[in-house]
Amino acid sequence: MRVAGLGGSLAAGSKSRAALATALAGAEEAGAETDLLDLRELDLPMYSSETEPPENVVRMVGILESADGLLWSSPLYQGSISGSFKNALDWLHLPSGNVYLTDKVIGLISVAGGTHGLQAINTMEFCVRALRAWAVPLVVATARADVMDEGVERQLKTLGSEVVRIAEHFVTEEDPEHETVCAEAAARLAAAA
Image (cartoon, rainbow, N blue to C red; front, side, top):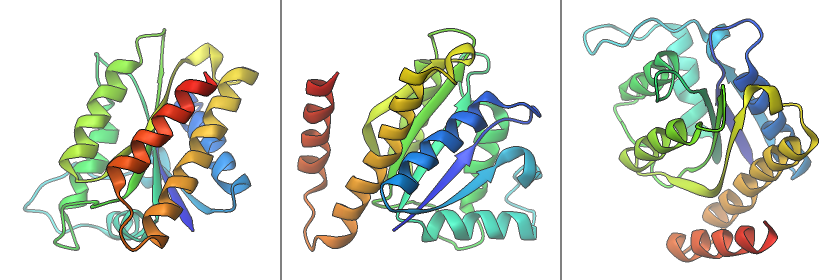
């Protein structure tokens, strides 16, 4: 089982990258191997359908396509995801020719200046659906100041473990009944809240 995390921000001390690393630690504790695709380190050029993808784009897309589950983390900028995160998603059009992440399980994280980070989560959920993937029912939207809070850390690690648990089900079951699995996960998480 492999889980890849995509996100962070272009800031050196990115809180959304720190949150992503914590969620990936939760995936590792659940038995997954992980990859962290840090937007700052990826240094992606702006997407253009007329541009050949450079090696860093090919590498990123290959990791995302081959992962069993994904974790996405973005700061909230102007009421939405960051431009650097959207640019990374735009590059999924190349080089494989497949523009979808069909049946990938994706956990969503947003780090904002306050509690309104759900706006970025909503945008990411639209992207998940457009890419034909499945969002984990648990999402973590937190304030920058709370990223290192024990409760938030526990939520992030739980999100990482949920991605592993649901992705394993999707990978190992012949007919995984995705809707049922996601509905059961939502009910289980609501009962635990």
